[in-house]
Image (cartoon, rainbow, N blue to C red):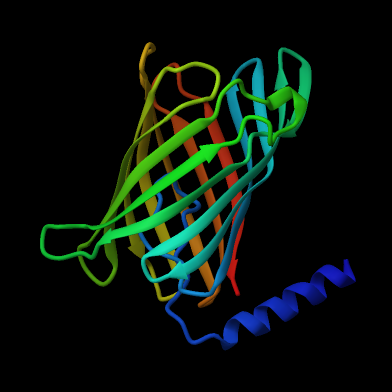
Length: 246
């Protein structure tokens, strides 16, 4: 415990020295930000999630981690790892889900009605996972992430994209829509709608909301929760996490 406290003290000091804009993270909402990690900086976004899918199924992410590196002002490299523990009909299963490698590319800055826009792409590696979670095929996913600034305190973000699960060739369409509000320079909140529309199944829609707190320009903590709107969506989830860059 003493070593963990010391690590956070060192991290908090070192990150506070960097004269950069406040950190922008892809968590805790489902809407990815178009912002690129500053050149030469390494950013980590991690969190723990409890989700109740239905009466017989729950899952816990312990944790999910997004690793990011800013190559230049228009490009970042990305790696996603997730360790998950599931309980389905009384049976427990846990392990590492397929690792995703990818990138984010800045497409344009905000100008008038044109939103700030970036492209995000990942590929899930079928064998880079625990035995119980390996997939049959490479699993790609992509999103166009867009953002409008309405005022100094309010912004709107939205994503459109597709993903594949690595088990079938069927496409799942993804959408998100979020509104962010700056309560103060350090405290922010958001409310969001998001959903998934499988090619051969009914779409599911969800609502979530959360808070973020900026400890310093390079360290942020978050808390969020969501519920399913449609019958086929997960019942609810709770999440907390933090993001930092060095």
